Image 1 (cartoon, rainbow, N blue to C red):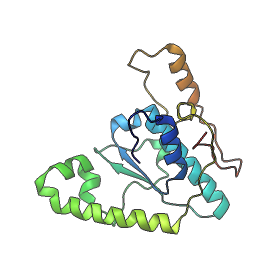
Image 2 (image 1 turned 120 degrees about the vertical axis):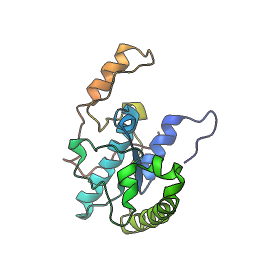
Image 3 (image 1 turned 60 degrees about the horizontal axis):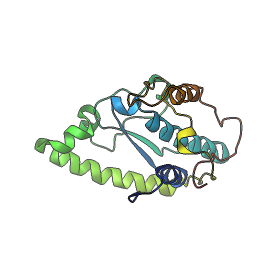
Length: 183
């Protein structure tokens, strides 16, 4: 997805999260410390929960890829975070290092080819229903429990709002599709 200059970021993110078939999370310590990244992860994970309840099948459509070697937070370890089809060096060294160092060029090329095939196959085998229009992106709950306070001088009310979002309301008790994209 590409947003043009002046586009509404929230609408674009909600639309992408509400309609994409595969979610690639480029994991790093900063990723797991980001409220926005946690909201994106949670929004897609909620769509996967609805898919699982409605079909009886789990979709391996949320792909945590290591941008830098980073452990997955313990409460998210029910998602497989390695793959025997993809070159192990990416999971050991991180995608950032593998793509930047010449000695890993063949591994990187193999990784990209295999990842592209995995994305296409996953999207075909597990068509995730789109979400319904709903919540503004900044109001979505997030998946990561320890999001730091904003460092950019935003007001305390915003920080309090983010802390309240950590309660992580769940869709596990309903088959209603999450309300994410559109208005």
